[in-house]
Image (tube, rainbow, N blue to C red; front, top):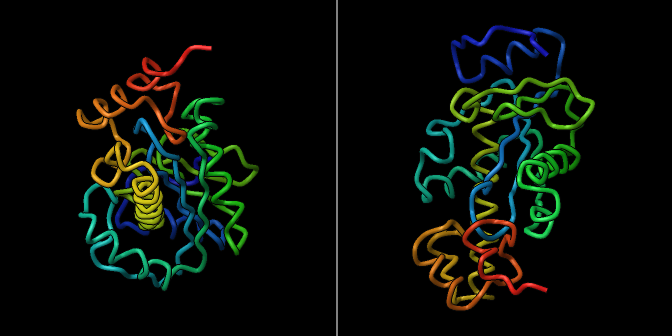
Length: 211
């Protein structure tokens, strides 16, 4: 829905404009983990108050892991609602990464304690829900709601990968978080994939046993 132009004055511009059009619960949505060879894709939806102020909040890819972990409880402390949605590796293999990402985003929205009436979605693909929404290219650097969701999704996914590292230490998940580093690819070649690997992804499928 094209409610307002693409130009922005602040990182709350899109939230403010949605409210001026009568929407009251504006949720920013983002994901983490589309590219890795292992682990889930994690989405987050965040509804922020109108007076939200958290210096240093930006796209999770632009800030350090230490800073993300500092911001995580602060976002939870100020947000009106936070929802998290996870799509597992087997779901990614079954329906493809784009559809699994959209499924995770839908789950995140449905788990908000406040029902949103407008969504700001990072990227170019709308979430398959009957809620008014606007997609934003590079939205995590243009909208504070999306930036907050970016941080939440990234921290949650990293914690999941640390748990996997304890279960499957031979892959080194604590270091690369499932991304296709040389060390990770070598481990897959040596040990074969584990339950959290995406068997439809190049770098993994070559090492899967054929039926």
